[in-house]
Length: 371
Ligand code: SF4
Ligand code: SF4
Image (cartoon, rainbow, N blue to C red; front, side, top):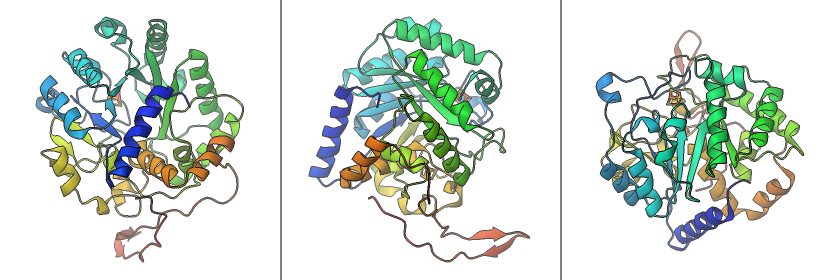
């Protein structure tokens, strides 16, 4: 694991506090989206499909810091859009660091060289650079040639200046395990602290719809990647049990409250991936009013293929707290890459058979709950 011990201890202390006070639903990472405007137009993006009047809106410094205070999560991930386009972002980042929260500033890195002097290296600040694979793969994913090279240059510059740097990688259709393994080798050579990796969520509003990997194929892909990764010393910024989930060895219920989202519209229900589900006016209202039981792989067709960390990393962490021996086993031996997979969630909602005749699917057998 690449996450520094100091940060791990802060998170462990926070989790323990939630347990001691019997909090059933608590946030682990606040997803702060202070704007939707971006300087790229990636094929799989579900954030930039808004009219100009929305893309021109920003969360103010005050609104952003109020969200951090309301939520109380120990980690804040600033995403967008492209956060570096936000003129007041340095002030927002400073304010979060002053609150001793760990900030992950997600960026496609195109503006990083220009804006780097606005930030100081800090144990509380990590630059999380968007790279969806090796040169050809990433440039195809962001629909622009040359972006990979500029991002890698920015990574090298940020590391040389003493910043914590991670890579944020999303996998799409057509990936080969060897390609992914080569990419992870490359990130190791670059010297980044870690890589977050997940299959792309099939956003309804993404410009291209045929690029997302189905759940079973994602699990097969991750099994092959993890098999190739034995002994290669990759640093993946995830809990061991989340990686085990990606490899198809765990059946988790989604816990989207672990990763609540605040953007220009309010607090997004239930997570940053689903649009059109509504917004709450405050963090408390989000936690109290969201019909959480309606979301997750088996509960909602929009969630059917989702394996995103915003839904399942918190589930894995919760599982590790209840079954530390299982987490220790995976930490020691890595995710299982052969044999049967954990059962796929069976849909509890109505699906449509070919010919559009509605079919009622029988209720699913309950998958392992980790609440
Ligand atoms: S995926 Fe990220 S970098 Fe690409 S268009 Fe969307 S916000 Fe911008
Ligand atoms: S499964 Fe959970 S994280 Fe994924 S889209 Fe549905 S609510 Fe969001």
